[in-house]
Amino acid sequence: MAQAAAGGDRLSLLAFRRAGYFLGIGLANLINLLNVEKLILGGSVMKSSSFLWPSMMTSVRENAWPSLYRACRIVKTGLGDQVGDLGALALVFSGSLEG
Image (cartoon, rainbow, N blue to C red):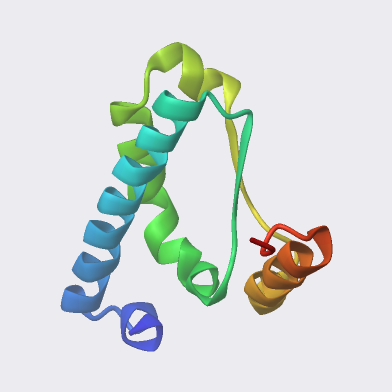
């Protein structure tokens, strides 16, 4: 889909805009509920972030409380596709999976 969007395919671009919009609502909810200072986004979806980021950030800005939005940074991880694997390992080594 990213290749199609890069080629200017209107349907793919629309799908990315819509996905960004709904992702932005979810992130705004996290900001509003948890008052987080930073959200770090990663994984393979972020490879297509140039198509999704603008609508996502607009949606976050429109749906988060202004003071909380200003206090929160939203960034892309530097860990690439391995972020999920590393997060799972962190859980295992921290003992958080033990009952």
